[in-house]
Length: 359
Image 1 (cartoon, rainbow, N blue to C red):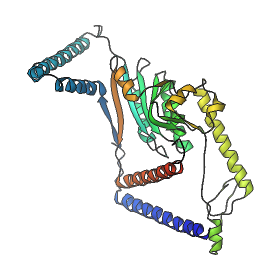
Image 2 (cartoon, rainbow, N blue to C red; image 1 turned 180 degrees about the horizontal axis):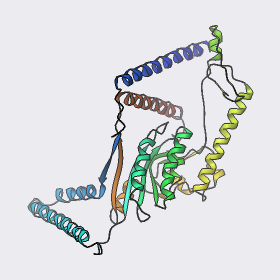
Image 3 (cartoon, one colour; image 1 turned 180 degrees about the vertical axis):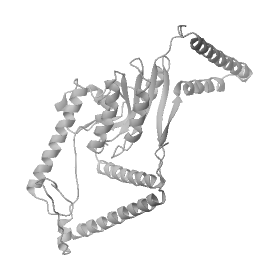
Image 4 (cartoon, rainbow, N blue to C red; image 1 turned 30 degrees about the horizontal axis):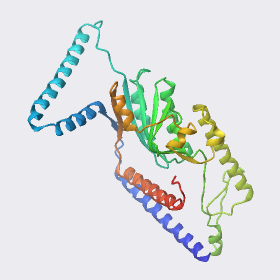
């Protein structure tokens, strides 16, 4: 027991030192970059996926073709592309001269967004810009597809991310969420907003619960004759602390807040997916894709690749990505956050290594 206390004190020192170094480096770099230019904080990158799919198909077609036919077929495909481009250009020029001229029937558009979530859902910085850009052009005839991957994190951060997706629903634009790997806890809070949720057969979904944990070093401090004082104004300004002596009333209040957060989470899921049995699925458990379909957490079993390739036959697909320009101290902060995420993931995998499920 004494070893664990000593180890806890050592760990606290290491964590404090690391945090101090990161803060110091951030301050130094921040002071060295005093130019505060408000413009050009980032830019949109738009990738037409139809062209990419067509190029891949043509490459395979030519690769497996007999060499004697290769040049002729390549020339034929090139001419077909040129012909289509000229027809579209001609129709556009005609429409510019005569607005009443009938344009060729326009395909519906599918806008694809990727969201890779961490504990703080920092990708919401990009998501809000991407959603704003899409809403400036999208109509109810189009569709937004979000390729979502997240194991959850802080409630307020994922609440904001969910609200960004809800902006799409409020504009009556079809929203589809594709889960290839995981959408659990806060990740599922985002997914449930969609009109349609698609998941790979072994994707992880659910974990509709709330968890909070923190170490307490009060006994270690007392052993080394270190006094810790925490002054607050307001009965519940601080319920549990890392260094103070926690009380039963503080624990009760903290649990009350956790239960209230869980109730709000359940209400949110029930509002957006009324077909689920909320009491059955809001236990904090997770389901693999196939089992998730049985409890209505998802609508179909399909990977994002399968879905987008099929949609490309009838729609123009564009991948939208907002690239944010980051200063050095911001990159250092993100790198530190990603390191913490990796450590937490390894710890969780070890903790669940003897279980038949990895969440």
